[in-house]
Image (cartoon, rainbow, N blue to C red; front, side, top):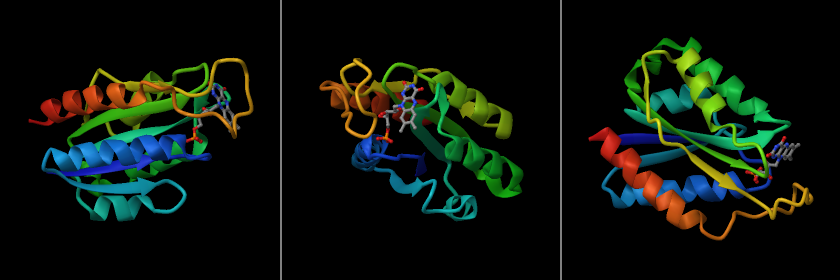
Length: 157
Ligand SMILES: Cc1cc2nc3c(=O)[nH]c(=O)nc-3n(C[C@H](O)[C@H](O)[C@H](O)COP(=O)(O)O)c2cc1C
């Protein structure tokens, strides 16, 4: 099955997570392509004709990154979006998990998509209000990302 992984990332944490999810989905026998918001256009993602989409980004100022929201809105405005049937959400944050807001943005833009209730919020940094450009994924992120991928893949079947 074709799976698109749409993500935004400024300092690389969400990108690392997106790449890991992509490898796991490939291990599960799926055809995967990654789309970074600032490097690809919504039309390119739609041309891939994914059946499912994983969507993730960092929290910026208490909200999902603006570029991600804009990208999701554009997907909704392009009619070809109908190849996508299922979605799931991941989020990197230091204090504010905004996974549910991303889910809501997807269901507003793409109302026909079925969204996995389970999300993958991964905290970065040590919670002390450190420099945002230096934070890293918390230690157990691979375990959480692996179990999330399993839930997502069984949601697809
Ligand atoms: C401009 C900016 C604003 C941020 N605002 C928040 C915030 O309001 N709440 C939060 O939990 N994390 C916030 N963060 C932290 C990021 O969500 C976190 O560092 C995330 O891991 C970054 O992902 P990235 O490496 O993929 O860019 C902010 C980071 C930046 C750069």
